[in-house]
Length: 61
Image 1 (cartoon, helix red, strand yellow):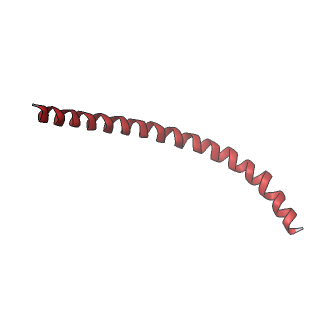
Image 2 (spheres, rainbow, N blue to C red):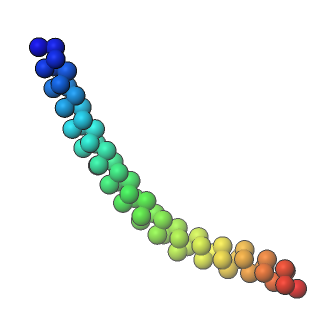
């Protein structure tokens, strides 16, 4: 009975962890993609226009 019990708990544990893992990764992935899109469009444009231009002009002149 102990052997059967250990197998049963292992199966339950693996099923639960797989379900939890997939749910968490899907939610995290969806949040990351939406967040990175907004940060890419706003942050990179600002840094490109403000930071890189003065350094280029200073270096060339």
